[in-house]
Length: 305
Image (cartoon, rainbow, N blue to C red; front, side, top):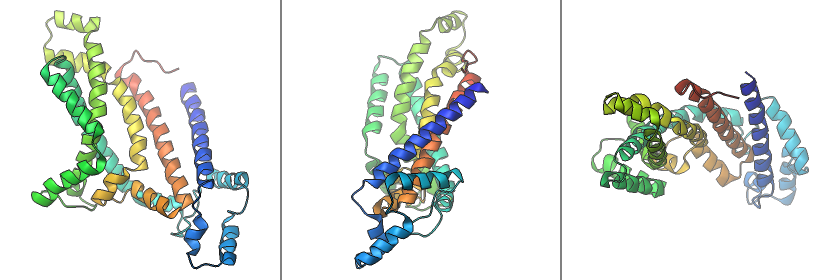
């Protein structure tokens, strides 16, 4: 309980720091959100009136204090251009983002862990080298190249999946596989290193000496310990996915939070940018906390302090 309370306090301080840094960066941007609202033909008087109405003529710390006061009441602000509460806009995109997050992480784990375990078991051989080379390619591949390639082959040429959109399982497959391919390299490398270290442990040699089968040694004794670093990576991935994968969402027409954030950046819609940033930071903090809480369930030797 003390550990959780300490982590919650740390999380609150992290979110406060993220909000302040983001607010300052947006404040010093050369782009003027008021000009976006007023339009090019607006007079100087109109622009100044809008600036005063939004409180953007006040000093930085006054604006930030006002934002924190509203945030403490659960108010993420109101979009300058869409004239809608930011919380409502984010919540409307949340189901699509959660679907893509769950499917993408599942695809990453299936591909990455399989490659990592196989590479560790074939350490130093040609199979290991080929798998690690594949992981390097997947990590280095641009998102839009993988997205367009899968879209061209499986949607345009073969017609197995829709070209884009949202709403059915068929729409989810290609974006999830794209994210799985792009993220599997990190998981495979982490899993390989962790698995090799665990396979050298004394208790693994003891299990082999007792005559246990290879599959049982790997999946029953080695995997639960080797997978612990991967759990921490999943916590980080949750935050990244909650912030949205802008390129993948744009290519596949997926209406997630990332697409909302990209539109807000183009229009300098500061309340939406702040809202998405805080939601992403909160997701990363929550994901890491959950990863820390799950670790002792997998390995009872771990104690939270």
